[in-house]
Length: 79
Image 1 (cartoon, rainbow, N blue to C red):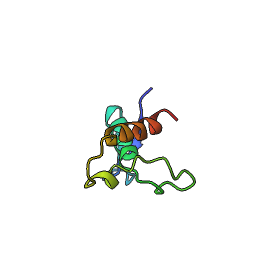
Image 2: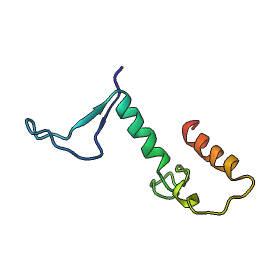
Image 3: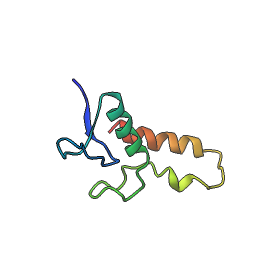
């Protein structure tokens, strides 16, 4: 089964006027990137979905930061 998703660059097909599609691996990669870049409270009715990676971008390193981020990312994909 071929995965399909709309292109988030919102390019328009000049012949049909429809939004461009991403297919196959490109669609899966785009979906994974979108999930990883979600912040907390960005998804309505599912506020704890995102790992909030941007929130930790300039934080001081704490001994268990890696484990916490690993757990947050696993939480997304093992739901």
